Image 1 (tube, rainbow, N blue to C red):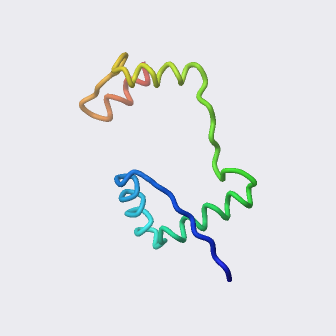
Image 2: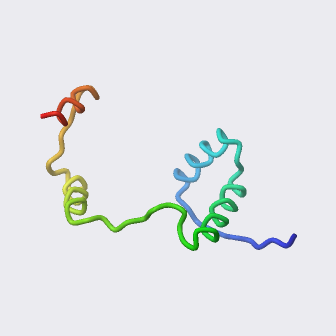
Length: 85
């Protein structure tokens, strides 16, 4: 079988973290890329939903990046309780 080469640049931290996960799954980076490309071809697009955020989500992302309207919790249970209010 003939093969083609794919070259890609990615941030080292993302690469390390992804490869740790792949190793736990027993998948090599090459196999993961082959799997991704195969799924793109089968789906005739990305094999997962990619959406443009709505206005509410855009505003929340902008505020969080600016450090605005953030809440902090000492325990995850406190976070869940805040959702009930």
